[in-house]
Length: 75
Ligand SMILES: [Zn+2]
Image (cartoon, rainbow, N blue to C red):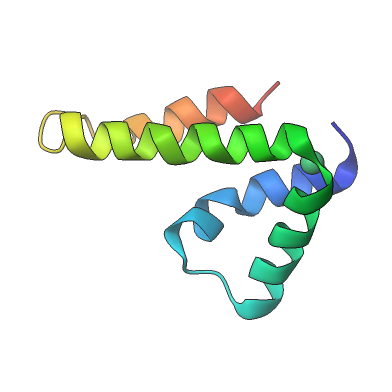
């Protein structure tokens, strides 16, 4: 994982929430266009969010998703 991957992954949460600015969104999209491993990570996190949102809406302890993502990106 190189430095630009680290930066993209650090912003992935905000990017997936659609809450990042245009500049950041553009930068993330550009990186995903040339970095398949980050596409996999983004897809996985997007699916994970959808899964948690649909299955564990009220049951998931707060912070669970954050901890899961921390584990995934700590490699
Ligand atoms: Zn990357």
